[in-house]
Length: 262
Image 1 (spheres, rainbow, N blue to C red):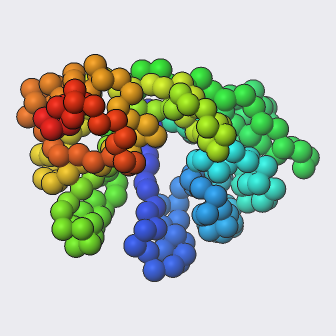
Image 2 (image 1 turned 60 degrees about the vertical axis):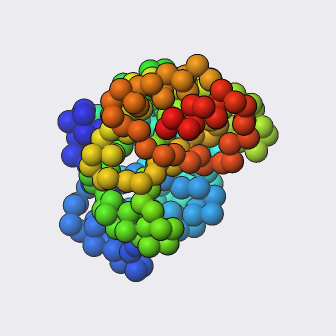
């Protein structure tokens, strides 16, 4: 959104004492639109924040895994104006462009892919927007908008080492029932090894972290990619020990060789 010229702030409630911190952020930034991400366990809290935002006169957009799976569960709440389902970068930027051009209404959002909306009490879910094919076109996460030092200090105090996350791919090809309609879909896409290495170099130089935590839905699918990633990280002086979101089940010798080099 920043690359497209929009002013962006992030409210991070991880260390906030209660919801009053969100009210303070609304008063400070006075946004035109508030986007709230939710998973099933945070649905009630997310809707509570949505009501606070709506009471301040702000357009409220929900997104994330749970709104993608069940848009109607959010659009039955009058405070929610629009749900962005599935991959959201292009869709939320499009909504901001529409607000700049005059606002969101049925005429402007009715034909937009990747959204769900409410009209006369009826929820309409438009088809998903086409996923981003080239993940290298995405900017690095806006970590500068979050108090990263607080996270690093907390993690190190609890675990004895500093660590940050990185995502190298999107989508999962396996189609398990419990996430068959996941945000990023079933089409597996992977960033280039050079792009990942460049982000690693940035994290290493900016935060001096001890480890890297990969948060991909799946890992180690493409052994050739892993080898190229290892070579790119070494070339960029970006080698950092890493761990995965899940246990690495593939323990064949070529894969272990690559993991040892990182």
